Image 1 (cartoon, helix red, strand yellow):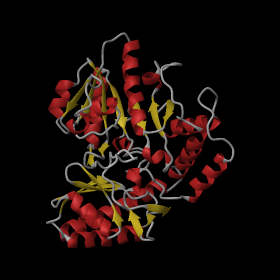
Image 2 (cartoon, helix red, strand yellow; image 1 turned 90 degrees about the horizontal axis):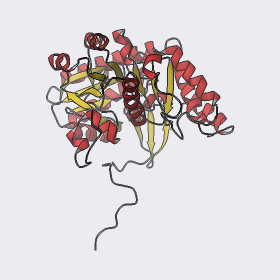
Image 3 (tube, helix red, strand yellow; image 1 turned 180 degrees about the horizontal axis):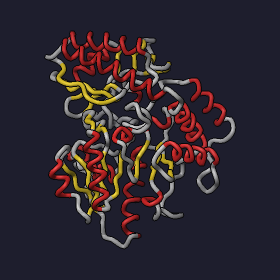
Image 4 (cartoon, one colour; image 1 turned 90 degrees about the vertical axis):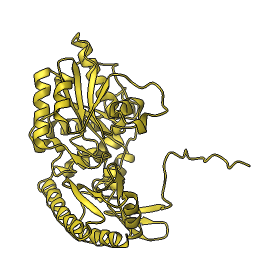
Amino acid sequence: MNAPFPALLPTYNRTPLRFERGEGSWLIEASGDRYLDFTSGIAVNALGHAHPALVEVLKTQAEALWHVSNLYTIPAQEALAEALVAHTFADTAFFTNSGTEAAELAIKMVRKYWHDQGQARETILTFEGAFHGRSTGAIAAAGSEKMTKGFGALMPGFRTLPWGDHDALRDALDDTVAAVMIEPVQGEGGIRPLPDQCLKGLRDLCDQTGALLVLDEVQCGMGRTGRLFAHEWAGIAPDIMMVAKGIGGGFPLGAVLATAKAASSMSAGTHGSTYGGNPLACAVGAKVLEIMTEDGFLDAVSRKGALLRQKLEGLLAAHPEVFEEVRGQGLMLGLKCRAQNSDIVKAAQTAHLLTVPAADNVIRLLPPLTITEEEITEALTRLERAASSL
């Protein structure tokens, strides 16, 4: 007799850990065991678990109003949009529930812009190793055979280029291209930062050809690299940017930020979202942004990122047979492994340290931005134990 199909669709290879509670940088399993969390829900819990300020604002808003739909004016949504505009390149914002939804709007915004310009520019250049979400549009953008295989005809109009191939980019980027979509730091692709000079050069090429520059900062944004957004290190600005993960501190929230020029064609009726920008999400998002933009917060992220990197370089030197390279910036770091990365993730889990794998045989280290120096030291002790066990 065949086993019954699981009630929960089996699209994940889940570990048997069942976490019941979170406290700052720690997760507490049903057994009572405490795990040091260097995943942050994959860069989502940017301020750690159960941050008191976020809990308080969520409680207050929950007692007042949860959802009213975008048929009405939502003051919390307007306030968050104004704060994001004040702290970024953007002139306007649209709120979503996830990074995938943000990617879909970014694609629509690019195409609508060129349609209204009366130009048949639809091609969007993307890059190998990218991850822009799991919708059919987002997987078409990434161009990964692993993600697209078996799902039939996908959204046309994307051309995927090799990562880091400047000649291929220059050859492809002409005045028929609608936009270039890129992550300043690839997360799923293996913690691969785009050098500042390359991002500057890409901005120049887009300016020369008229193509829009779309940055996917879903994983690398919201303070993760030590600046509010990763592109700020290069001193450039995009035309459109996708944001999610850390902006809600654990509450589902995403956004598309854009210049007035890029967003000029998105009039009433061109896009919508039932839940996007609901009062609960926006109240939490506003508090996250407020905390991250306080004096000294991002400087502390950079300082702690430098400390973590220094310790990781020491770990690499002690275990050259296990680790090959340290990558990344701020508190978005990766270890390229010589051993199988999944084995290291499991060994770290045995040492009660949570990490997350990525492509190119990398393990990602994405602790909360509120991690303490003592917790960084403890994490390295546990990583050392994991490496020694291999």
